[in-house]
Length: 311
Image (tube, rainbow, N blue to C red; front, side, top):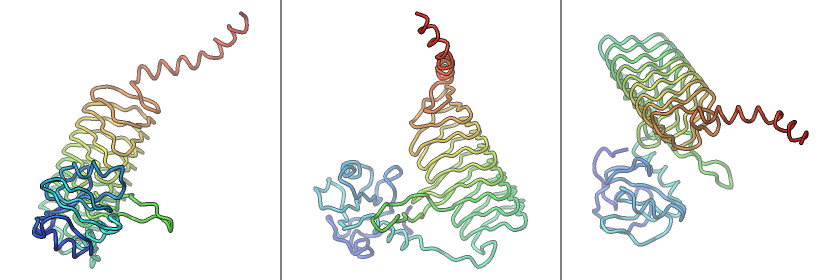
């Protein structure tokens, strides 16, 4: 998430009432999570296990719960609760806007695009040319759709990320200030849910085709010309590279990368990143031929036991 203008370290510290280490005029350009952070961004960290990762990331401002040695060329914001203060910044720079109509006045809709009845289009949404948005689709604030996009009935673009901190008093939500970006020539089936990024964009790239009832988690990137069948669940922060095929009821864990042109057979569970150009099956998913051999061997266990008893 980039700020509308450059702010100083001192200005940011005053918004969240935190101490800072560094030049008061140190420039701050935006805020992001660790996996999408860029130079000029704030990243937050609240556990010693991840201090080094945050301090050595591309972020130039680290919102942290302990004053540590600050790397050269960077600055610190020292807070007793970085998670809370990251939310404060999201509220400040991306406050919730109420809806005044089914299609917001600030929405931009391209020539030739068809909007069917009972569609909701939020504030600052941009929709390209020659799209078809079917009934009861909900497009939350800030989403961006390219040209020739088809969204079928009941799909929701831009709901909040499923991201919580477990506190003694209950789960504390990390606020979502990102959006969803759908590139040209994408088809999305009925009843899909594409969550927005926490600070960046959940992205579906050009030519991808999604079946019905698919869940895509926050900040995930789906590559060009991917084919995704019904009931697939993709967790947050995944990278699905170009021309990947995911068949029905595949589940993918958070942060996994699926390599280009991989094929994942139905009902497989992905617990780690997988190389491209191969076919996978099972849970945990392995190369399909190897997994099917293992299943064949398991079926032979009763026969083997009988033979052993005769020995």
